[in-house]
Length: 158
Image (cartoon, rainbow, N blue to C red; front, side):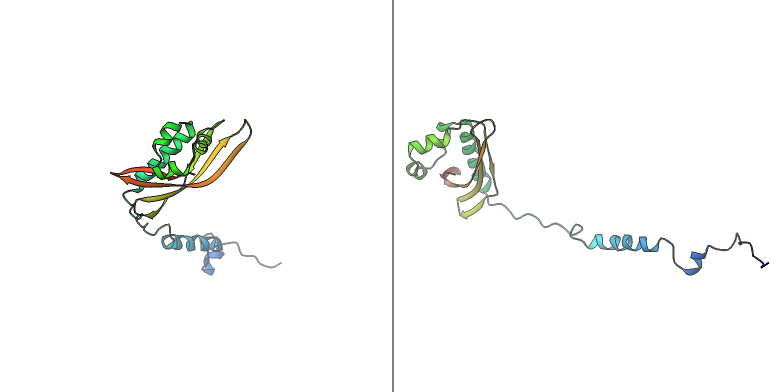
């Protein structure tokens, strides 16, 4: 019968003799991840947002007030926010039809762009309900201009 030697309780386990840990293949991706995170765009300093033109906020507010008048069917306040050019271009029938909403309505205003000094264009989406289960969405844009003394008015209807 061959002689078997009992394991030595003081000797290191066999994987310690090879210099590799048994979980080494699992630790490698974790090590790479730890080294890569500081180099990722998340760790980079964020750039400051470009400064807004001083007219952007009042122009956006004018577009919002006009669309609130559209949403509530308030033709009087809506007309007050139109330039004389827009009033001439739109007939009373067009304005009446624009401000009359038979059902619930909503709007979205996108990020505006400066067309030229004192003139902005905002993309808009008008959602109106024609019945309980039917909704229509109309994509367009609204142009807002500075009429002087930091007063803003809608120059192009959506």
